[in-house]
Structure formats: C-alpha cells, structure tokens
Length: 140
Image (cartoon, rainbow, N blue to C red; front, top):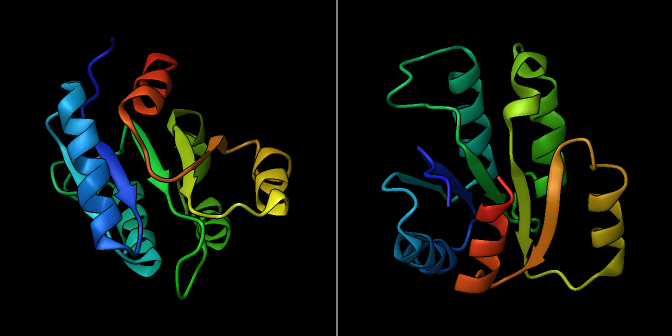
C-alpha cells in the first residue's frame, strides 16, 4: 500500500477525530495526521496551505476526511469556500477528499456524489474502521 505523507481529519467531534486517528495510525501508512475540530479553522488551514505558508506547518494533505454536519460551515459549505480560494485550481486534482459523516440522509449522499463529485471521491458513514480505511487508501 502506498505511503502517504499526511492525512487531514476535519470533524468538530474530538472523540471521532481521536478514534479515526487511531485507525489510521494502526494501518501504518502515515505518521503525520493533522486533526482540525472546526470548519472555520479548516478553511484557515486551506488558505495558508494554498498561500504556500510554511509547507511544514500547512502541507497539502494526501488524504482528507471531512465531517458533513459541523457548526458554522457544514462540510459542503466548507468545500464551497475552499473552491473559491486563490490557488485552488492549481491543486484541485491533488485533493483526495472523502466525506466521513454520521448522516444517514440519502439527500446528503446524493449531493456528495453528484453536485460535489468533482471534489469528493467518496461518502462514508462514521466510524471509519480498518477495512474501510484500507479500501480507501488502496485506491490512492
């Protein structure tokens, strides 16, 4: 399986971030996992990443998991804002984004796989487990 430089987890639930980080670490395909517990902080991360601010502190992630239901900006709104950032078009093909959510709403799945199919590679229901993570990682 391909080694990934870094993985980004965006979820307002710290317990979910901690659990998903353990699942990813157990797979031994990366040592660098960044967790962000706010969509607003995630947007700031992407701004700095795309502005080239300190690649060490704001590297472009090899894989990104975004929760759908977050306060301030939901996952779709976050992606809408990221698409408007200067530099987005130069890196959009490098972004590997999966929605990782507790939403069982079929409309959310439909929206993710149609209206956002240009940026979202997949839609998975939480929690991430070893099998799902290895399946996703093997596709990269």
